[in-house]
Length: 111
Image 1 (spheres, one colour):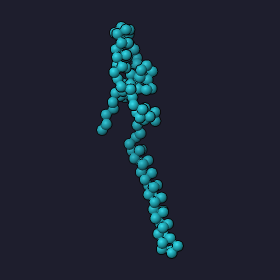
Image 2: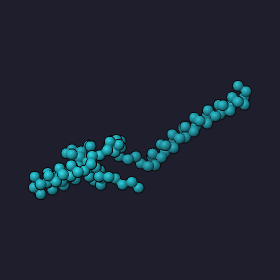
Image 3: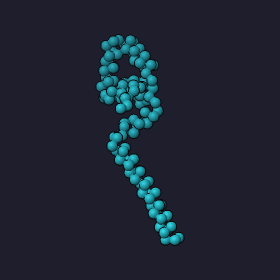
Image 4: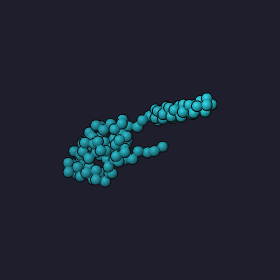
C-alpha cells in the first residue's frame, strides 16, 4: 500500500503548508488553519511566522501529477477503476472478434 507524502499544496492559501498537511493526514483544512493561526498568535507573531516560513521553505512543493489527481476529486475508487478498465477491454475484445468473424465468413464463403 502506497503511503502519502507530505508536500506543500499548489492549491493552498499561504504557501500551501496547511493545505498540504491537511491532504497528507486527511484533516479538514479550515480547522488546521485555525489551529495554526492561534499557535502563531500564542507563540508571538514574529517567531510564529518565522516557524511557518521555515516549514514552507523546507517542505517540497507538490508535484504536478499529484495536483492533477486531486483536481479530479482525489483518488478514484479502485473497484470503479477496475470496472471501467474491464468494460474497455471487453469493448476491444468484441471489436477484434467481430473482425475475425468477418474474415472467417469471407474465407469459408469463398469471397
